[in-house]
Image (cartoon, rainbow, N blue to C red; front, side, top):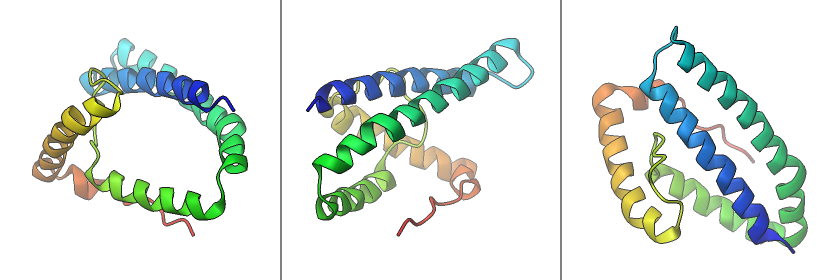
Length: 129
């Protein structure tokens, strides 16, 4: 019933997480600001996971049948292959911005990951059946 409100709250949480990830990427271990950002990111990450597991997913499962969820899961897997691999906190979350700016950021991220070897360091997501 309140899917838009739940989505807005989740997006706000994710935006805050992206900002913290950027602070971590810009910092270095050993710096006090880095450790503050890391502690805050872990706390926020746990809160976000709890919100999704305890609030969002139960409502989503009740509202969407298994077949549709499987279709959405397949679309998500395809999208992850072309999505940005680094935080971009200044990119707006709107659909139009994601299709343009997000796509450009993703291309640059994938090139950068290949050039630095980062893509080889990250294992693939586990397969869920």
